[in-house]
Image (cartoon, rainbow, N blue to C red; front, side, top):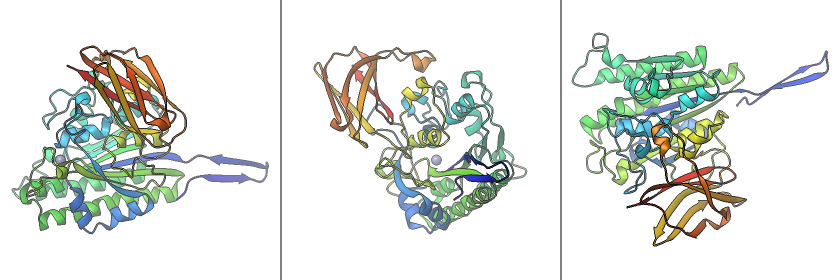
Length: 406
Ligand SMILES: [Zn+2]
């Protein structure tokens, strides 16, 4: 892969090196359980994974915890684009009634930090742009994509809605072709492609030959986008990251439903071409890591207040800590984390306000310090009734975890 181009100007005896421009393509395909994906021949996803990796992953937040989020489509997409769970983004169903836009999505963050960067969406569901990202809404920051290609599911003349739902496949074909064409011509810095047909086949036929065919069709659609990316890397000084994932698994018994917290509904997967995958990628990463990974890849300096709230951490590059857990018993706090890189110390901050959720600011105070390698912080402390937010700052990454006192 082309990582940098150095041009030698012999005449003036000067070596000039240019850093390749970073580009990201995220593809979310709807409702493909990990066991189904692993059983179907998907040569394109295999090709991408051969450059980077494939892992099982999860949706649904922490089971029976305050971050638990239904394994429903729209909440699953929102987890991915904001890097936070339902207790923060407040999307609980496909009606998307009252999203909390204070938790910025990656498109808004990228644009706010680096207005030069371009964003695009290619989607078989228009609500991804109009409701989840909240394009043009003042409370969503008046964010506008530089390019959008969606709404085809509302065009019943061009795509007659037949009972067999095959029009959805045709729309996915249109969307994936539109994405491939636009990557070739304009190569946005951050793109999101959403394809739906796999979920339709799941709902209609469950675990079935129709589902398997739909997964094969999806692989082919990803293939035309992947081909466009490879062409760009050949022709231009660009460094691309591709991430392909899904929004939920399916029910254990038939594969028709989803929404609950069974292992099969929660278990998803991530494919990426990135080869600097860290320990996090190999230990069942949550979908919220996608946002953090994309922002790191694009070298986006995330505003501290946004970063303090992010539930995901990057699965590429260096990380120090992961999987924070806080328990209180009497007046003792026990805070634990898994160690990814032993070096340095962790600063632990706390705030018992959640003004951020309403667009305000929280004042954090330092609670204490611990060595990263210990994986443990204990302290005699009493938290007020309600939610206290703990923030762990380690050398390579931050984590946050809530303590809820009833
Ligand atoms: Zn779905």
